[in-house]
Length: 235
Image 1 (cartoon, rainbow, N blue to C red):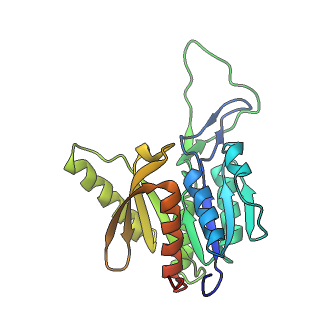
Image 2 (cartoon, rainbow, N blue to C red):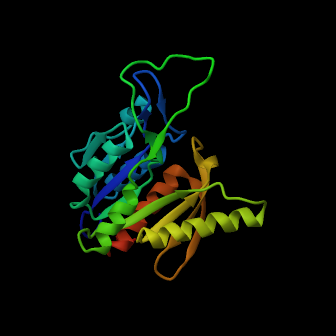
């Protein structure tokens, strides 16, 4: 058991941004890593608040029934932001695995958009950057949680240049969003059982390269959260 139980706030899955009553914008995130992280936190003796977007019912059914787990289903980026804001002040560690939409419809139609030969032009607006908002609150002293973010990057260029651009963007987010650590992965991780994760640490600038299943990496995320809060178990 850990020295003391921590509250982990974990986001998982995609968001769905409605265009009309039928159509919506989303992405390929499955939510598996976030759900595995919640399971790992519970197994380690912690509490978990799991805020997730639309995911397969099988993931929900596989969660253990545990009084230390609170599941908060949401749909849109705005709803996820509200749920995270409500839970963040009681959290010791925040792990943002969710693939939150960067854009949402500027106007959601109340009726189905009709097909037209001339095509359709959509006007989108940026969604709120949930992690950046948390980092801003932490920098201002309104939040005490350890912040672990994710950067899903495809990079640009070829070969080594592509990896350099991925790492550069992850470092930029690590600094600009005032995070304690950030996990860099690629679109190949979406829907995959295993992936390559690069963990960039704010202190010391260390980069850990981890090739693992999402279940194994989830346990590592919990240990990282424990270490950031000084509550690591004796092993």
